[in-house]
Image (cartoon, rainbow, N blue to C red):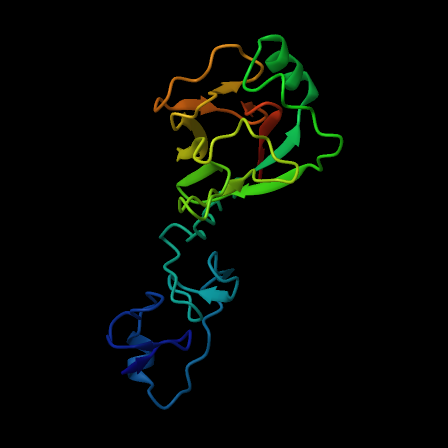
Length: 214
């Protein structure tokens, strides 16, 4: 092992394998402590910023002839998309049902008080209906009340998660399901894509509105 004039420990005795300085003088005068050669320029390592003499940095080992390493960009964290549905008594929808002589229109009255309810939409499927212990029906969006909309079937409809959004499927309900004030019911068992803000109408006066947030 030979020490070059710049103070590097070299495994070769002709040229320093760290900075490339000739070692002839050092080999002839091994008793003289090696000192940095003022002829060798002191530069700043482009990788760690330490003072560097010669090609390789003593601190981090970076080769000055190689490109300066850069940190890999942090992976983008995808935004979390959350969905929920609000359920409310919709007087405009109720009037359309009554005017069209809808389900039990003569017997059903619009509720005097019906607080807005909220349901988080999670999982691959969200069922809509009215629970029935005797039938073993326990929907996610349970519209059993009070007040209770008698036009809603126990297993009325389902929301199916598709590519981060939702599609509506009517499960063969007695009185049908409409969307956004439309008159034509959604065909049973055929997925109908929904978007943020879409309104699903079931029963005699119930409207379910989808909301997306990030």
